Amino acid sequence: MVGAPGAGKGTQAALLAERLGIPHVASGDIFRDHIRRETALGKKVKSYMDQGALVPDDLTVQMIDDRLDKPDAAKGVILDGFPRTRRQAEVLDAMLAKKGGRVTAALYVDVDREKLLRRLSGRWLCTERADHVYHETARPPKKTGVCDIDGAPLYQRDDDKPATIKARMEKQLPPMFEVVDYYTDSGVLHAVDGDQPVDEVTDELMRAIAPPAR
Image (cartoon, rainbow, N blue to C red; front, side, top):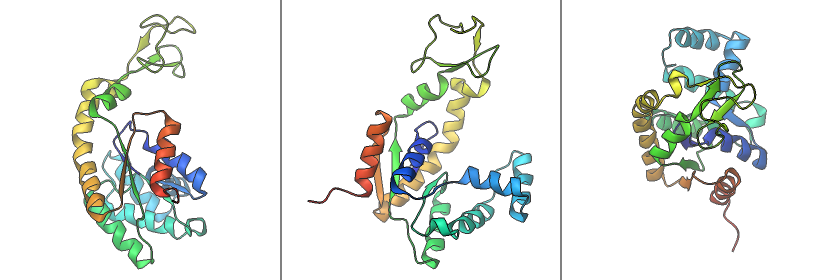
């Protein structure tokens, strides 16, 4: 799965995995699992995460490699959160080739940058209860700035503010587009419009993976 933050690729990865009967393998889940089990790899990953640093490619690849050797991955997986860079995509191809496998489809959930910004920056939280969540367009409160449930003021977290999100996107989008280009050149990229209802995006992705017989 390929897509920018907020494009919905995690949601689609989970839905596709359920429909196809194969595991949804998210790199973040693998990290947390190794850390929870206090494996040797997990301890190394934790040391980077505790410092707020990126986990090096070699550690990420080792964990992905280990996960793909599990019995439930024998018929394939939906990879989510990896690869994030062109180099990781190249390493993944080499790893899969050694196992006699390959990337059969790179599914790109494409959403316009301005729409992504609106999706990500529209969230507001209740000052009394963090689970009272609103969105400026998807779930607006009845009265602007006020929680429908308890009448408390709403606030926006710093990492949900437009300036913060724009800065994050400036860092994350260029390497993602390199991954898109890599899989386009490899002939396995399937791009779908992510600005549709969730089920329509899922159906379109399913058609890209297994087009109907003629």
